[in-house]
Length: 607
Image (cartoon, rainbow, N blue to C red):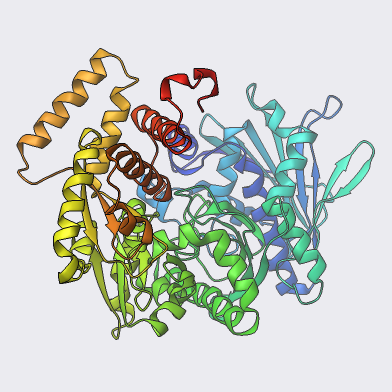
C-alpha cells in the first residue's frame, strides 16, 4: 500500500462557499449529486460488460455514525480518482460554471464536492471494472486529499462515506434521506434501495408519465396527485430528436392570476426541477406538465436547463402538441372544449392580447356577451361582419335597450373583452368593429313624427321640470320597442360623478371635501352638459298617455316612477333621494287614485 498527501488544485473552501451560495440552492442536493454519479457509473458499466444495476443507501443512525451510498457501477482506478477529483474547478470560478455535465464521469468531481456542504470529510472506496487494485480516497474540507491503494477485496463499484457536519446531521438521517431519494430518484432506470432497521425499502418505480398508453389509469392518478384534483384531460407531448417526452395535465380549475406555467422536469429520469418555467410556451398556463429528456443540457447546478437552441425547439414542439389537442378537441368533442374554455377563459383572454400564436388558434372558441346572447367569437364573426361594442358594462346596458335587432352589440366592459374585440379585424380581416358611446346612440334614434314634434317638445319641457331636482334632463325619441317606456342614459363621466355624490353621502368631511374638489376640477375643465337623461319612448302608450294628463300631480308622480323604473332596469343603484322619491310618488298616486287625502295615510302604512 502507498499513499501521499496531495493538495487540491483549487481553493476548496472557496469552492464550497461557491457551491452553497451561488450554484446549489440547498445542501439537500448532495444526495441528488451522489445518486447522479452512481447512476452514471452503473450506465457506464452496463455499456462495458452488461453488469451492474443497483444503488444502495445506508442513512445515518445512532448505531451507524456515517452515511453510505454504494453502487455496482464501473468503479474508479487510482489514477482516475486522483485526476478527476484533484482538478475540479481548475483555477477559476468560470471553470466551475463551464464544466461539462454530459459525460458520465466529467461531473463526478463537482458532484462530489457538493457533499462538503453536509460533511467535513468524504471517503470514497472503489474498484474498477477495468481491473486494478481497489482504491480509497479521503478528502477533507481543509483542502487536502489522500489516495491509497487498499488490499480489501472490494466488489466492483464505488461507495461514498460521509461523516456529517454539526449542522447537517438531520439531512443524512432516514426521514430526510428517504424524502430526498424519492424526490430525485423515484423514476431512475436503476434500482435504488434504502436500508432501514426494518428492512430494505425500494425507492424506484415505473414512471407513469412515460408510457401512459400502457397504464392510462396510473397516468391519470399521477396527474391527480400532482394537481390535487382529477385533470380535465391528459395530453401526450414529446420531441423525439432530444429524447423528450411526457404528459401535460389540463388543470380542472383556473390558476391564480399571474401564475406562470410550471413543469416538473426530469433529465434521464432524475428530477431536475419541480417548477421549470421555460419548458413550455408561456401561453400554456392551463397545463401542468411532467417531462423527461435525455438530450437537453442542464446548468452547472442541475436545477434548470441551459436556454439554447435545443430547448427552444423542444418548447415549440411541446407547444404544438398542446395546440393540436385544443384543435382536435374542438373537432371531436366541442362540449368538452366549451368546458375547458369556461374554466380558463379569463386567462386565455389575457394572453391572446399579447401572444399571436395563441390568438390564432384559441380566439374563435372564446365567448363574448352580446345583445344576441353569449356567443362564441367564431360564431359572432360568421354572423356579423360589422361588430359594435360598448366600453363599459353600464354603457352596454343602456345602449342594448335601443340597439336594433338586426345589429349586434358586444359588452366590452368585462375584463379584457374590449381589447379582444379590437383585435378581431387582425384575426378576421372580413370583420370591422366600432366603438359606441351613449350620447351618439341616443342621437341615432329618430325623433317623433313631424306632426307630433310640438307635442313631444312640450312633453320634454314639462317632464324635465319634474326631474330637475334629480339632475336629469328629458328627451323624447321613437324607439322600435313599444314595451319600453323609458331609458336612463348617462355617459361614463356622469355615472362616475353620481357615484362620487353617493359616496359623499356617507363619508366624513375629509373625503367629502376631496370629492367636492374633484367635481369642481372636472366641471371647470368641461363646458358640455354632464346631466343624465331620461329618454321617453314615443312609441310607448304610457308615454303617449302622459301628454293628455292635465293633473300636474299625477303627471309628476308618473314621470318620477318612470325615472325610477328606468334606473332599476339599467341596474343603477338608487340613492337615498331616489328611494324617497319612489316612496313619495307611489304614496301620492295611491292617494290620488283613491281620492284620499295624503295627510290621512298613517306613516306606518307607507312602504
